Length: 370
Image (tube, rainbow, N blue to C red):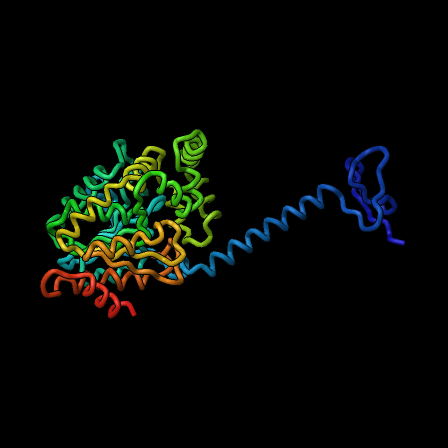
């Protein structure tokens, strides 16, 4: 027979050795049978177990994430250039401009990309309406983004330098549009998982591939507006929720993912991701023989399957490249591969005799990235 447990009786100030432990304080205490668990204690233990399990899962995912292990904060000088906050490093004559994706900021490009500064001046902006460039009252469609980049480059005194521009996701679509507007000085356009859609329906079918947050905020209904409004009111809390939701991302990168407003987000979504102006821009780049490698991970669900290959077959300046073991976060998970691809065009395109062709692009890329 089990020995009775002692209990403290509130108000009596002593321990009794004969009264069994009871869960409810009542004039008629109910004895617990052997093996029974008090309700609140059992529920609390379950909650603690779930919390501990979730924390262990998050830590495991975080520690084993390729994006986390490959990332470190980038170096350079942070400053305001026109309407944009930028990080700049290096003093080389060519410029490398790195554009981040939707629901992101310039810190997406970590220290691995600092190696570009050995040969170039590297500029990494927080795009208009995002990150530390969030304080924007005007539109954030394609013309506004292009004008903001132009203003930043002019203030930095880099508006006449030969430039390689690289962009991830939404930043890839912007890179194509901006390069076409700066055709005289753009040396190459490198894209990673660029959303090149023919119409809005096609875009909406692929937006979910960018992540659940993009899927939640996409659209003009009350739920997306309410979600974004809550994040604006509770920015700090929302940033930590983003960390919990994305254990596969570096904590600073995940936290900056909520630095935008409803107007800036939807402006960029409609003006860059859903807009079809990229096709005319590609035509301009083709006419000028500007190399455009369209790159994506094999598991990336954002690009339309076969779109890059189709464009490469009809545009001699376009090359389609696929990384077998990568998804949409290619610049995070494979930064050194992406770095080498950018370096290829930064250092060798200007040395090619005559206008570059798709075959010379392919041979050059193969030699540099294998």
